[in-house]
Amino acid sequence: MKNGIFTLAFIAIILGTQCQESAPKSSDFNTQLSTEIGNLNTARQTVVDANNQVNDLRTELNNIPEDVKADPNSGFSELLRKVEIFESKTGAMLMMYDRVIPELTDINTNMQSGGLNAEQAQMHYDSIAPTIKNYATGAENTKKLMEQMREEAKRLAGSGN
Image (cartoon, one colour):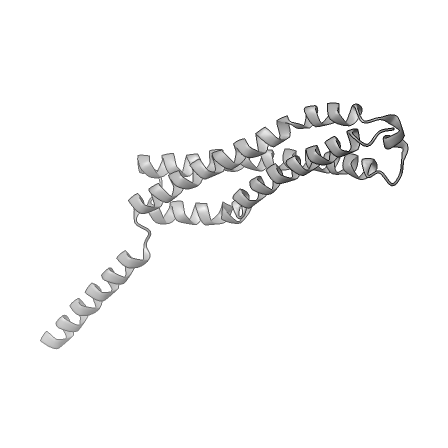
């Protein structure tokens, strides 16, 4: 009988220890979530900044000499197509940020207020994590693409007859 009680107590201790180790610690997850929200806001601002340059780029494109615009080998048509795709993609990225950042903020707020425990918050976070995967790379690539398109527009503007 003593061995049975001792065995049950030992199993309960081991299970309790394993559950504590596998459950996310709320302060660690809170910090991770706050960092993630900050990183997303920074990445979003990078995309906003690049997107805001589209009007300036379109002005540069309008100032390219007509003979360059008409030349099918100048690269103007391709650049114009890139700008249109860029606008579409950055618009979609901004919609993603505008949807995901408030969701993460809600998770963080609900966790801090006790509305969600760390495990529930982690599950909710994991359900939207694939959406934000590689957001920093996407934001940096957006910035680089805008720089490349502006350089190409300058090159084309300088190649008129």
